[in-house]
Amino acid sequence: MSGSTKVTLILDGEKNDFIMENDGNILDVALSHGIDVPYSCQGGVCLTCMAKVKSGDAEMDEYGMLSDDEIDEGLILTCISKPNSDEITIDYDDV
Image (cartoon, rainbow, N blue to C red; front, side, top):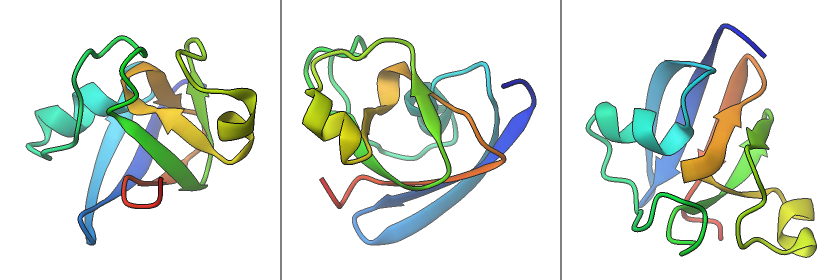
């Protein structure tokens, strides 16, 4: 999906909103907006950046270390995920 997405990130009970182009990964764009999201490896291996998609859709470049059950629950690794909808809400607190 090309274009941009309105992203709402929930972290430590606070909502953070920003607009991002759909060609970047969610983690890098959140960090560039000064949001202190959790991360470590930035390659889909450590699971530190795992979050749950509450509304909207995201596409992972690969599955990383997530199980099929975790993916079915709506969990993503934000370091390898791009938004795939006009709006998306991602919750770091609900994992």
